[in-house]
Length: 190
Image 1 (cartoon, one colour):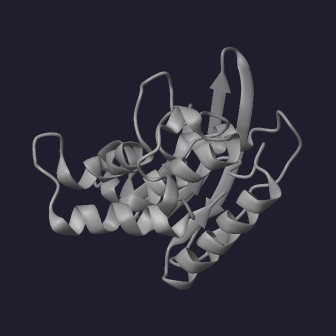
Image 2 (cartoon, helix red, strand yellow):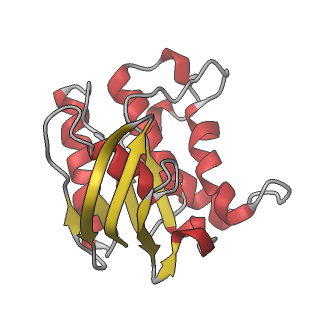
């Protein structure tokens, strides 16, 4: 993954100016900066949510405008909830992370179900898999979103402030999960 000369404007305000970032397989890169400094904009530009006014994003050697293999990328958004007003269980939300691999019309295979269960186990929510996401704490919501991203078995995991508003116990579980993913060769941008 790389950003080269990335420039982005939100409204009429320049937010990114000439940003260069490169990640290699198995590397962890943390973008640090003050509130409003463009961290989230940079992260969101990598997945195409914020268009660049100049520069280029490349994923796995392919320019973003031609990239289609989204199953290789897991994304955890900033400060959102896994519930989003839709009644769903932890397992159902995490299962949605497999859609990039399975598509909408294919029934989940045994491998898909195993990947979902593995992701739920990794974030320590095994005992809550059948619970409604709306009944979870903020830290547990964040763990569900991370499990959803991990269910796709991504090679690149992009996380926008994954620890914001998360209790210490959840932070420890998430840190352990990330260590395991990086040890397995996953690249992480946060």
